[in-house]
Length: 473
Image (cartoon, rainbow, N blue to C red; front, side, top):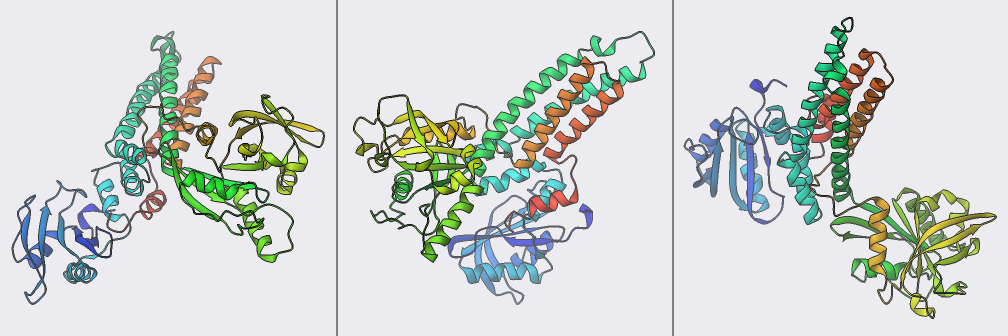
């Protein structure tokens, strides 16, 4: 992209609709000319001017605050004009249309942030953090996005790249002097450096994983036979009466979703139709949707009515379950058990059955399987804290990890790939592989890390990233 010949772009930087104010943002080489024609004078940079916004005949469209930022001291690195007017939909359109009339074009999604990246005002990880900050669904997610926006993640990656560069220099030197009686690899501590770097990347990966969980959250499906208490559990977890609770089997016939938080981690939880054989066409469709949701989710909470099974010794650490208590879908697709947490509900109806965490011995045919089980009473809201802890543990969410920053799937992939390549280089040194192969592993590791900040990136990647931004950002 030729930064000297870019179009001048404009967009509404605040949400459309009624509000106290609206902000129209203009960026590009014509921003100063547009400012003069809308305001009737040349605004001083970085000074707030309370003034009229004029149409083509000099009539006042609105009165508000005008701010002008001259390049390169602006968000995009270009001349930027911001017009803060009243937040009515008609006024918003009049001001924006006036900027377009004067030669600006409507910005593409994320184009302001893209220009900031291309003008080296922010790197790619910071650009993505802007969108993550806007979309943050919890205080913790907002804090982690701000850490990334402030450059904490990028600084770590740049430090890794610096260490990797120094190590590559030593390996390349070992190639150049391979005929000499000099052990550069040992003398310069290449193995120790790679070992230290591998540990640091793993720490960053742990922090990034937590950030990704804060951003993406967890998809949970509540499943089970009719009247197991699924709707009661959804209501208990969400703190609302979202689902209808009755003693009539088959009350829930469609997916019903709520968004909750567990220690700041967003959780998308879905109640489903009871899994059973039914002749009702509507209920059959609900059961089909429930099955699809179970296959696609991160975790299944399989609710079992504790009052309907034989529990000989409620105080025992283990509880025996059998195939008969499972919905048919679980027995037909036993792989779903890999992401299933068994919930024994209605503990209040079973004498001496105390809410808590235990292990069920699950028998399907001749096979035995130990499966984590939480005993609760959704109606009495007992054991829900244990359920929350089990969910966090199952997905690897750890609130004790410090310095969490927002990360996306591509960041995790890049960190994992770099770590694997560094491990390969370490093994190459240990097994006396040719230095050329070790150097290639390190070069590829450096390339993977560079993808995070955008030092190495394709146009397709940039297009995909910025197309998910809102227009005025």
